[in-house]
Length: 108
Image 1 (cartoon, one colour):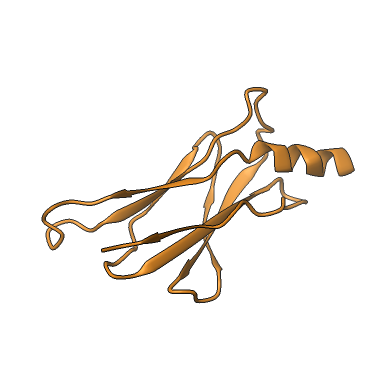
Image 2: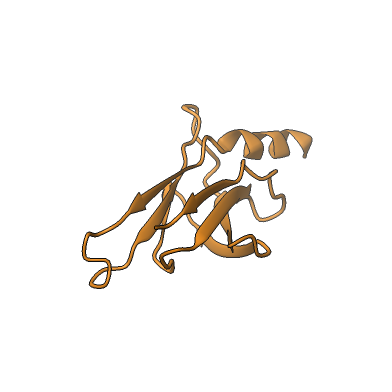
């Protein structure tokens, strides 16, 4: 069981955030894209990724559960002039990994 937990932690590569915005902000919403990587050795097919988010330093809540093989999540429920922070974990149905580093974006 300990080995399984170590494998789950190893699955989580670097979490990165990108902002996709449109010059016509009123016409199209801004989105934040959370992306991550897996090690070259692969991953367990039973693992899902849990994305947690807070807004303006509020309490973190579960935002989404992402199934494999996806390696990104697009958060379209964002608004300008807000600070969004994210972290993620891997979950195999029994064990949840330690969280990744928390990354934040301030939207203009």
